[in-house]
Amino acid sequence: MFQGAIVAIVTPFQNGQLDEEAYRQLIEFQIANGTHGIVPCGTTGESATLSHAEHKRVVEICIAQVNKRVPVIAGSGSNNTAEALELTKHAQTAGADAALMITPYYNKPTQEGLYQHYKKVAEATKIPIIVYNVPGRTSLNLLPETVARLAEFPNIVGIKEATGDLKQGSKVVQLCGDKITVLSGDDFTALPLMAMGGKGVISVISNVAPKDMAQMCDAYLGGDLARARQLHYKMLPLMEAMFFETNPVPAKTTLKLMGKITGEVRLPLCPMSAANEDKLRQVMVRYGLIT
Image 1 (cartoon, helix red, strand yellow):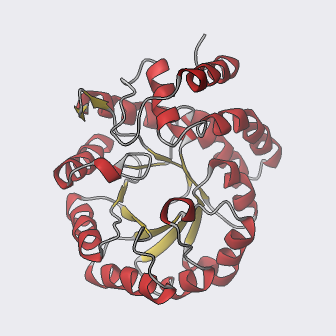
Image 2 (cartoon, one colour):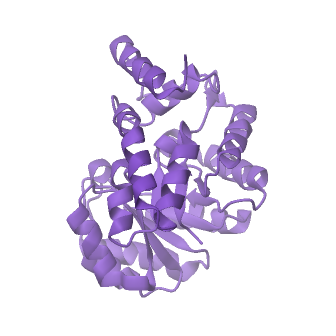
Image 3 (cartoon, one colour):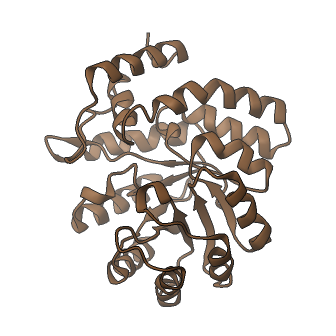
């Protein structure tokens, strides 16, 4: 159910508030271009600076606008297990197809603590859960052996593996087999991770080039490696540009230059530097996103 190109969608703001109309239009842009699923309130959606009321509203708008056309995987993680449980229960009640739960950041729990965190939420809900491992954001790594333990819970169905470490990704696939779906959390490892048994990607670049990422995943999963490789290398400069500064600043700046949103981010994130925006603009022109 959860495979292919799944966009970690940005949350558009205008004058500090959620821009609901722009958000709905972004969702339509995604679906029209073949995106296989949508993640509201992930890292790219600036979940860290959304109030609980805003978080829930963003999830509810996404579910309503998508209207069952593709899966909606609602971000619901927290470094507070009780808060993660609350947000996961909301995702379930609201009608999301799954919940994406980041590992607890800042607290630095042990592997046993991580296991108990997910166990608590999994046992208290029925919604499918995708675990999200991104050590660059959280300062801790969910080890493959712990993922294998979590895969025994029937509603822990996948992992967003964003270590950028293909050795670790292959170890997760090896230990878990068909028990969970492995999705890349980094655009540049989407293709190699699929080659090792992964099923797709939760993607940043899909915000701005959804058709190409969706077609790359379709090509690989459909057995056309040459086409998938061609698209991977086409997208590579844009993948790099999405991290000229902290995600989602470049993605939102790109969408601003494409005329889709204001590009506003919330502090402590700030607008892209003029020099990096110029570099980004040059990549976009070469790619064909703008003239």
